[in-house]
Length: 130
Image (cartoon, rainbow, N blue to C red; front, side, top):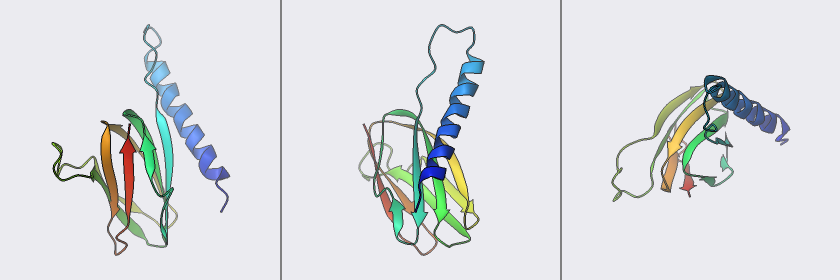
């Protein structure tokens, strides 16, 4: 599968996010906060890449539905139940459409997280934040 269209979408989304930040800070002396972008493809076999790695801070996650399901619901939560944020969810989202995508601007603290999917496909994608 060619990843070029996904890469182009990711680059454009980062430019749009940074462009909006720069426009809002024209008179500011502080530089805009860097945004890391990761594209996650959900297909019939699970997640690609198999594990996500983000820097702490603001990140842009693009999720592509290639599962064949009309809709998928996914969640991002801390991976370890004993953490202070246990039970809290960074993201709960339902993506509609078989070939749809969504962008999520997420702020991560360092630690381990997991993305889980509902809809009969019980996949888990580990997330490491450094």
